[in-house]
Amino acid sequence: MLAPLSAIHAQDLSATSPLDTLLGAIQELESQHDAKCYSSASRFEDFVSGTPLSESARRENVLLQKRVARRLWSRASQRAGLAGAHLVRVQDLEPELAAVLAREEDGRGGIHLSFPGGQSVSLAEIRASQYRSVAFSLRAILAVQQDVMLEDGEPLQRLSPESLEALAEALDAVTLAVLQLADRDARLRDQAQ
Image (cartoon, rainbow, N blue to C red; front, side, top):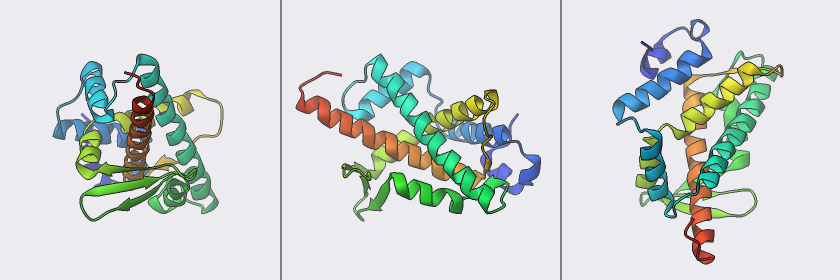
């Protein structure tokens, strides 16, 4: 049985494999909430996004999460390596996150997200919290880690538990923002998916 994320914080990170940290985070999240099967998670995602996603849109959403996770993790790994660190710390990840998404809380339970291209959305904190209750982002990060393990390219530095949490939260925010923008676009074009 894997240790929960809180126990991983207390362990010597050099003795913890990157996979243990990530799987421990998934286990901790899913032990606090009902684990969602694919169909339940899909229905929930449709509810959160407002417009039901087609299967191809759902696949594109997963690919987007993986691309964003890989880009952020790779750049933070390079930054950590240049600093002589052997794992990605939050301070290595923060500049990369800021380059992708600006996040501001509005003080009334809402979050305002802005992309570098000028698109922006506002989300209710409750919606973000609901979305974070499903391991969408952690599974995307796990998929990236597995892809990297099977490739011959440059390996990524391990994520500290805190940077894993920050990356997952950023992925959830990006995904929610993209889903809301897609919903807005679908409604303007009067499309059901």
